[in-house]
Length: 559
Ligand code: TNX
Image 1 (cartoon, rainbow, N blue to C red):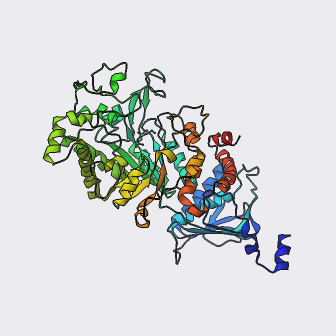
Image 2: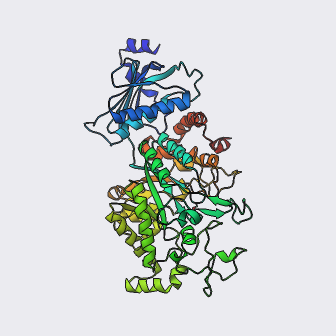
Image 3: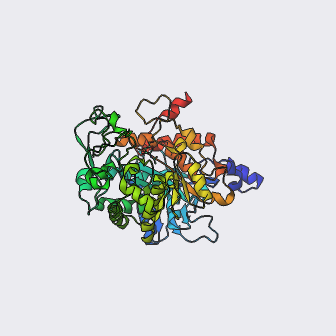
């Protein structure tokens, strides 16, 4: 019928069909032009890929087809009549290096990427043109894909997701699955939070007690105090360097950069438990008069006792941090980073910087001597000295540091990238100082917050429903066009105090990761909640297809 109308009106059907642009693709592409007719993908369809990298992408697609629908396609260098063609060739005028064009005609599907990343993102879009329901005929697939022409590229260069493996440990196989989810959402940075008060998670050969001591604690602590979880069991684990290399490669094959985070100077109880000399007060218990100790509220620690050196078994912010007065602290951290940087090709290395109480430094003679010798104003100046000293070291290795917005305290290290988490203010300030910024404001993109007011699983608090994530705008109005260029993009964080199991990770990130992907990829003017909501219905089916758990909070909100 439509064909007839096209003929009668003598207009190209491509043009006529342009109004129907909803293909249920998330994130929404830059431009979609629907055509007429369809391509049928069958067992006879051949993936045409002419070079080695193209064949890698073809294998990725085949692995997806195998896992999801139970079949693979032949891959060939030669042209075929019934094809999915993967080509990578510099565009004459590419809007972005990650740009791709995807063209479906009745004969086949052509994906053309400006770079291999672009081709890969084209394949991600193709994946979403495939059925969102299981394949009932694995031996004889018959998938209809509408004739369409898509031009697409991302809005932001940094599209990230974070995972805290310090509070709870997740096996390497799950980390890979998480990376797969990022790839399916066209995200390109995985921020791996590897060390915290409750566990050290990366093998460092020079310091074996990081593995034997710092990687384990007593009890899994789902609640706030020991006694509420599975107490007195040794809980923990770490990734061997071989596992880390394998994960980094797995991510690189999906065009995802893994950024390791080694926290300093705070959130360092686990390392201090293994090597107490990293603390300003290495004795098991240090009594400081009038010390406002948090831990004194714990039943097993007498009031006035500032610290018991242990891998923490409760959540929070702890006052015993790396000692900034001792050179041996810096030597330790440099040696740790020496091993870390051999494992991670990422230019960015995250060194934390958040939530570092200054109480110990205030009472530590060596820290006070350092403040004097370096002409620093106070302990905040010492924090800045700490970060700058580590930055200088990493710069000599060709690395750029990222730090949480507390690294603004006492002055930013010269080339530091700021991750703005306590709202957007830190990011705004950093951009004004011409520093690069990654936005991760808690209110919008902390996926440890609950997604419904009727949350029946335990969360850390906060209320961040999917609409809120979707409404997030990473470029603050306060910035001029020039300053806005310093906003590299944004990232959602998954802190795991109350997330101990794999299915809970999925429950917390889905569907909000899908909203994030559209915030980071799609043109601002294309963002439309009502339209997204429609496409989300298909995305829910895809989660089922991927056998991924997800929150049904969205449906509660509708009822
Ligand atoms: C703050 S965000 C932290 C984390 C917690 C998180 C809980 C940041 C840099 N620090 O240590 O896990 O809040 O939402």
